[in-house]
Image 1 (cartoon, rainbow, N blue to C red):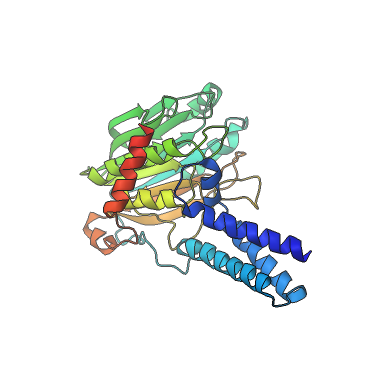
Image 2: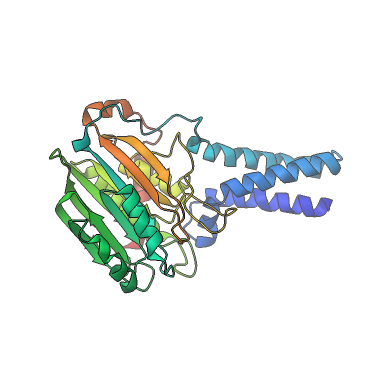
Length: 351
């Protein structure tokens, strides 16, 4: 048992160190995900070993110290996504219905054949913008009941799990399907007009996951995020990027995306909001995201109830307050020359 525990401890140390290598291989990037699980298992091994098996020899001390540092690093990485950390997107200060709006992001799961649960969720929360991921033609037909409620939509159903439907009540100045990196991976880019007349830029994304079933590495996923990040940074309008990004909030790629885009994460200072896997509680990660420019304040952020998918939907209510953006100017993430160079290298590699 002692050898087994030391072996498991060594594995946890290894998979903690592995993602620090900024390589796109899926079997490296996948270990960005289970920080909570690694930390919990590590604490359990430390406790059991120290109580029942610790003799104080060099090997034991070395392995357990490395494990302790690994657990500390995992907790440190997740700390910003707890309620005891400072909020990155501050709470609303101005109540103005004409500059407030809501967003629903939902990966409905292509094999889910119970549309009623999702449709009822839409009716209950009545979002102004909906980003629906993985719909096929069957799902498009089922969701046609929403067409009367939403004055504008962009639809690209597909049976390869990369279908996309975009609904909005806001006036679209511009909205189109783009294929940013891969020919079969659609995204939506739009410019929408709030009731106040202010314009916002909205992206809905669903890049490939770090899974050999879909891709051997994360080159295309990373590049798609970073290309949109560069566009967000260069835009003259306030920007929102939402969707199932197939990456966790605390990964190096997501941090690089924030550095390049200048966008803020409303989960920081509030919680994990784990959206996947809805059916496996011990394997849940924050994969569905809403990133916003500093001109936005948060009214509400909620992980919604089960819709019979492998993802929980995420719902956000935002307030457009450009006059208060200076208070959010200071961010944890600032892009330096090396960050910009690395981002461009990733984009060039994908292209």
